[in-house]
Each structure stands twice: as C-alpha cells, then as structure tokens.
Length: 171
Image: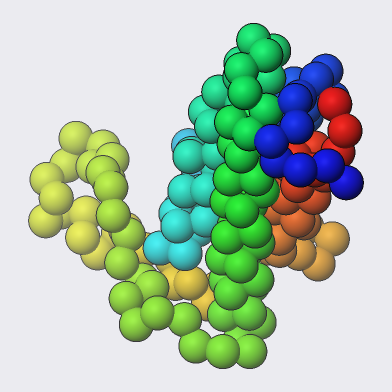
C-alpha cells in the first residue's frame, strides 16, 4: 500500500478511465430503462443516480490528471473521492433495497416524482388520473431476484473497490 502523495502511473490512469466509462454505463443503463423501457423512477431511484452523475466526470478528470503526470496526491485523491461516491451509492442502494423488501420504512414523500411528464398532447389536468408515480416500496423489475436497487448495490461495491484499490496501489 502506498501513500496518497506517491506518483501515479498507467494503473491509475486505466482504473480512472474504466471507472469513468463504467459509471457512465451504469447511469446510462438506468436512463435507458426509464426512457426506452418506460420504467418510471421513484424518488430513491433518482437519488441513486447522483453518485454516478458526479463520479463519471470526476474519474475522467482523474484519468487526465494521472496521464498528464500531475501531482500524485491529486490523481489519487480523485480516485478516493470516486470510491467514496460509490460507497455512498452503495448505502443508497442498500437503503432502497431494504425499503423494497419492507425491512424498514422509506421516506414519507417517496411517491413524489420530480421532472417533466410527457402529456402526449393532452393537458396536465387531463392526464393526472393516468400517470401514477411509482412508490419506493415497489420494485419495478427484478432480475435474478434483484431489483434495480439491488443491482446498484453490486455495481457500487465493485466500483468502490476498483477506485480504492487504484488509489492505494503502486504506480
């Protein structure tokens, strides 16, 4: 294990590139299920995207920093930040999965969906009875027994591991 001030090398650059693309792919998949598959996200689903929205560009900066041989503390610090973001994403995923399995209660406003609603040319009042925002307790889909939140737990854990390992490994 090395210190955060050690210089970085190809390992950190490749890890940061992998993390940037992987984080973008995870959130892109979620957006695809929403916009192509028609799965409306609940409030907790939307919150779980934030670490990816912040992390993907942050890891792109980490890759640039490492490849340009900027100070090691900067590149390694960015990788740690990416790892911490993924640990936060892990927490959000575990919390949401627990709400779906009814192990604990979700937020009181979990049925509130923010954002735009496609009215299909109708007035907003005309579609109020047609659009039902999803509840956080109801998993929209389960694949191999895991909901989207459950799969986010796995993705976040793996990406956090990669980020932290790259941050503390030799160049």
